[in-house]
Length: 449
Image (cartoon, rainbow, N blue to C red; front, side, top):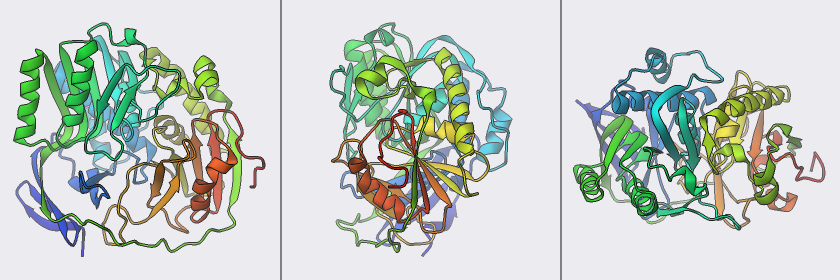
């Protein structure tokens, strides 16, 4: 069975997810004429609230991508935003479209920032779109950025709370200063995919309660809202007296056909733990200040708010980090693995690590793996998160012999005991495991433990 059906009638496509489940996709708008196969594959979720998942080929989450492509996707959405909301054509649009169609295009380590007519707040949604939101924001001056988080940070106040009902981890928090939202400036919400739009409406409602304003934009790679979902947005606009713009690379509707499985048969991973070489490397480039010393997090993730001028400092630090890490490579096939919400900085650094370095991230999202042609998730490696010691995390789509090494990026320090469940899974796949600490603080007692 092939998961991508060849069936196509005009703008309608059928994607076979599993034998018992398929999705009918009707495309409404594809402004850059990007082939659907360049955008996503599909998989089944272990989630009764939503049984399927669009697995992005641009995002760098569940599938490995060239980090330059993931950053280019942010630029593509920035171009659509300029065009849709501000009526301006991006001067690099032709190059951007070529890149999305699979052509090799130049990579800019510090993209040109386009000045917005008024200060604009960009917000990336955790977990999946923390890097995407940042990759959109980095293209603008007169802008600020932060991302929501699923984490609860003791000693800090979350100024916005909202829910993502369909998710396995529903609560979002926002740890930024109130003054960042006090000005009534436009807000741009960035997510990888909008299915119903309920998450975007929830945060808009939350912001309006404490920080009312007149204008929002919802940006996503994919927009699958139905007519009824779109009507909810119009009703919200009228009720709150606001304008909500919509920006995406692909717009359409989805119809699920079949019955989602209540239980999934386990697909055992055919690999055993090996005697992998494990080394720890500390990066001194991001040792910053009060946030690090008090809470253990990095300022430059954007979790606590960044301004456009901060991005230039970050670009330089990421390039310095990636250039240093490039010297550590021992093979031509290198996976750079971000962890959870810590995606953008590892992705940006990976872009400077040379040919053959690809990027993806670990995730909380429980996806059913299946060894089927074209199915999005072939292998799954579960482990208890080393950061909180209780949340089940995964990394996907890695197998023995696929890579020469893995670089695993961490934002916070942790004990070697906390790291062991993840490390045991990594050793099953990778002959060399390099633990990269943006905290600048060692976690293992020995570089070969």
